[in-house]
Image (cartoon, rainbow, N blue to C red):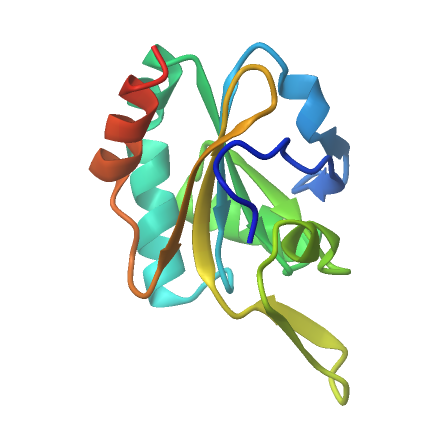
Length: 153
């Protein structure tokens, strides 16, 4: 996995609307990269709903939240509309970002599906440096992430 102090790997993924999103376009802001396994799963639904509810707290810390999974942008769009998710969801269909950030990935060759084996949070600061990395065996807690962001102020 990437380590604190590393330059954050660049990525170019599509959002729920099929538009290209690059990490570098957020220079000058902190970025929370929330890697998660699947849209529509219970834990991921809860986490992303909590991110949306806490979005003003992240904005107060000059921070953008990006959810990243291997789901398609079509699935992201449907899930986002169903739940009222307010932050951007990125489709890492080829697992490029997941691999660049050192997440072990698995691919079901029969179904051509990939996913992240790990749920992880990476905080990238305004200059593009990794400032926090955590793997989560269960749902992440926004309070922990917000505490880490407070250290960047």
